[in-house]
Length: 199
Image (cartoon, rainbow, N blue to C red; front, side, top):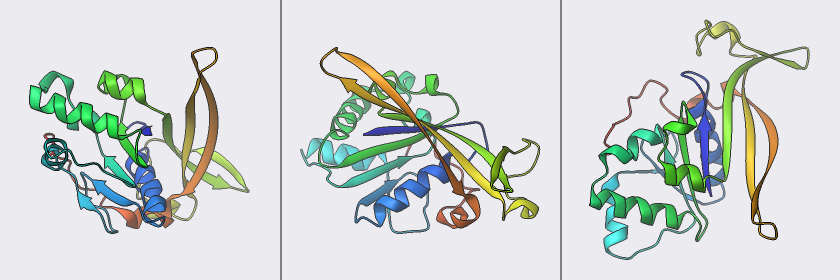
């Protein structure tokens, strides 16, 4: 499974991805991540993937969290070595309970093979909860504003893709989830800069 979390800056993309990774971690999945999480994980680099590729090893029961996935796998900078890594990586996502999660501001900036194999897109945005209803948060309000901590939620609007093998076509269905932000801020460092090279 490949899932992409999409949204503008400070929309809660990485926060959402970290939350779902944590749920998998609690189900005994191994978590690989190119950013620092506040629960056990392995720091993901291209060298780790290459090592598995050249030694013909396989991942199993693993989640790969790639913040700014369009930088980690930049098609314009791919060498033949990187292409080998990438192809193996995508292939693994359909086997042995291996799932790839990534974030991006725009879906079309992601490498084509990731887009074509994506199982879901999750559009992230910030909401506040008042009287049991949710309202979009003004974009000028800071993400970590203490005045809204108790009412801030991340809206996850999922567009899920399935394949109709009879008619050989894709089918989509949607689902919306609200996550209370205060309860998941502790899952990762929101101020960390991500390495462009993925190293």
